[in-house]
Image (cartoon, rainbow, N blue to C red; front, side, top):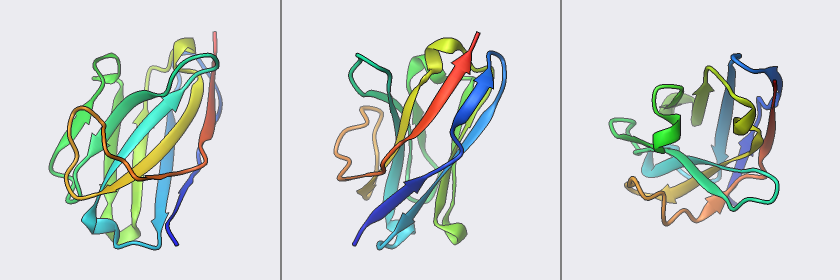
Length: 123
């Protein structure tokens, strides 16, 4: 059974930082491209970033470039999203996702999803 578990969400002031880990269970982590998405109240789910199975390739939504960094540690079967210079508009539920093989800049094709972790940025 495939399971993705996110953590690390919480309340932070504008300008602050958070790191979100996501661990994959039930699959060989190093075979899977991973991604982060987010959904704010009343909005559709939004692509944040993706990373290839070996971590060599990363893709970001334009609004996150320079502030967010996606990374992974295959030995720990964990992916991370480092978020810096957070803004109130970054408030959302953040979801991690997995797909077998390579990822792309479109963020399409993810088959497995976590339950999400809430990030709230106060002004």
